Structures are given as structure tokens and as C-alpha cells.
Amino acid sequence: MTNTPETGTDPASATTRPTVSAWNIANVVTVIRLALVPLFAVCLFVPGTGWRVTALVVFLVASLTDLLDGELARRYGLVTDFGKIADPIADKALTGAALISLSVLDELPWWVTVVILGREAGVTLLRFAVIRHGVIPASYGGKVKTVLQVTAIVFFMWPGVPVLIRWAVMGSAVVVTVGTGLDYVIRAVKLRQVAKRARAR
Image (tube, rainbow, N blue to C red; front, side, top):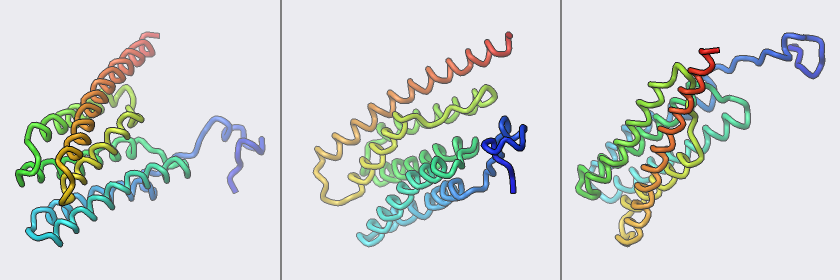
């Protein structure tokens, strides 16, 4: 049995934490979300109300896995650098597929898709640009942004939702998406500055 810091029998354990494998249940759920993206897109493009409903169900299930993997990672201490990067990428892949598909189907203006995906691509590139300095985890604002985007997409996919409600939610999603993008830029700059000061010591 491995000694813990509380026992006092293993001095090294007080300063060394066990390495968490990237292949844990939280990250597996994230990978499943990625795998559901092409299935969702195919269902959305097949004509018929039944396929539209199927696409909506797949989208909702995939979206709910975002809550599940985050909860699993926090509750069981399964937070990894892979998860910090893969989780937002999975979110972007799902919402990106939905936005592009809706625009191709002429159900959502392209400017909305371009603005949202432009921000998402920019943040992803920013994450990789500063990864040598550290990982920028998803912020609370980023989670709010994701919820708004998912809700707006569901409203655009669900038949019969009033246009005013659709655009009220989508407009909020666009505003928060742009705002959180600026926040990531600020955090990336600060992270780089901290890393530079640390190297200068």
C-alpha cells in the first residue's frame, strides 16, 4: 500500500503527487464527445423531421458530456494537461460543426458563424502559442459562453422557436464569445510576462 503524506512514513510523498494518466474516464468522455461530432453533422444534413430530431438529441448528449467530464475530473482528481486542451477543442468542434451546418442549410447567417469560429480558432491558436509557458485553462466566462452557444444552436435547430427568442440568445452568445476571447488574450499576455520574469531570475 502506498504511503500518504498524512502517515508521515514516506517523506517524498509529502512533496510528490502521483501522476494522473491522460487515459482516464474524464478524458475518455471528452474523446467520445469528439466522436459524436461527425454523427451529429450527418444526421443534421439528412432530410426529414426524424433525422432533425435525432441530430438534436445527439447534439444535446454530446453537449452534456462537457458537464460530465469536467465533474469527473474535479471530483476524482483527474485534471490533466491533455484534458485542459482537449476539452475546449471538443467544445469548439461540436459547436463549429453545428454553426457551419446551419449556415450551409441557410438557417443561420454566415457572419455569426464566422465571428464565433474566428474567435474560437484564435483562442485555440493562442493556447498553443503560449503552451511552452503554461496551459490556459477554461475560464468561468468560457463556460457561460459555451452554454449560451449550445442554447442558441438548440433554439435554431428546434422547429417552432420564435425568431425573437432565437436571436436574443444568439446575440448574447456572440457578445460573450467576443468578450471572453479578449479575456483570453489578456490572460495569455500575463502568462507570458510571468514566464519571462521567472526565466530572468
